[in-house]
Length: 486
Image (cartoon, rainbow, N blue to C red; front, side, top):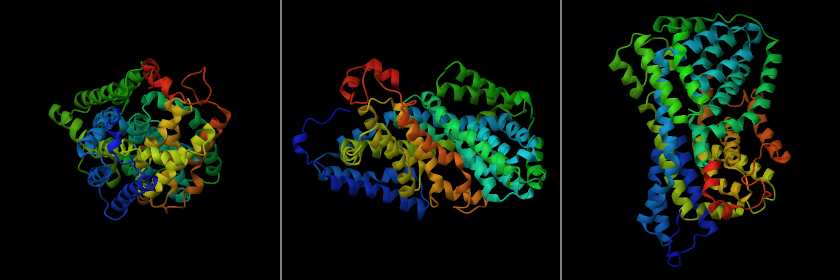
């Protein structure tokens, strides 16, 4: 961003003032989330009336701060469009029978002997194709808790397998808001981001599967619980299930395989879902296109089925889009006022290695989840603070986005008062601390990332001919490299 020319007329923002403003932003988000249950996007927007007067006090004008906010949102625009397309895809895949088919056959073929393993795998699949850990916990997770209870498995253990699967799929999904945010704030292509995370996810994922397999050997029983049978019966009643319903999945997979953009791949899956809904499910054309924007809705007395099906649509993503846009405006103004730089200078002053850099980034993700009750806030603010430091150490942006997810996405479930934890505990019927011993994936991922940093494994450089040193100026004069890494 181009800095102002009249810097001499400005009062330098002190470290104390920077910390005070940052704390006010965090507290405002926490209060509206915990006490008033308000919308975080609205709170970000209302914070303009605090941040702009702060800037005016230091000699800035409201117009230049507004301009800085709008310019910074350019980083978020691609993320917003992907979010909106993901909403359309979620609704379209329900209408086409794609999501119902995946869940139906996932529940149908669960083997009691490997129930916990199957639970984790099913939730991984559902979350991967829905892009939401909360949505997965509130749908497939509810059914799986019922099955686990009927088999005599403690709810906390079943919840652990559900959480591990739901968060893994969410993290690896190009439709996930946290995945989109992390790649966007770090300025890296979302598929580069996901491919880079595969390496640190595989060890924890495999170990978690073994963990749940061993625990599951102690239990037995049947998967034919009333809740599961009712859910499967409802899916059969309202949809034509089968291979044709999976065409939208195949279309999306093909577009991804041929390395098309996330936006085109998701839109292609959504449009093909609308076509399948019309020609295979027998839905009216006007109704099907309405689902693309408004989401799917079904009038049913089955609460689990309603939770599973009644969602999606472009309109359903406007709130998340607002959080993203308004969050980026606050980040842009804080960046323009040099508030972020002041704090970063102190925080990173003692960093002497890329391992320490990863550790601080992950730690800030946990802190952001604790003080603002929100993954999105944790990722946006940590990314704004730490992303420039990765260039200083000659690290590609995808290293930053990976570390942001290790702390910002997974860190929320270790905070009992975080919004994601409260929601998950509510739908699964477990306490906020009971499942913590049974989420090995969420423990292992940050550890794996730190080990990789220590061993210099998959900590890829911007310039191979340089060590881990400041290459900011060289990169600023190298547009081709900027394009290559983002």
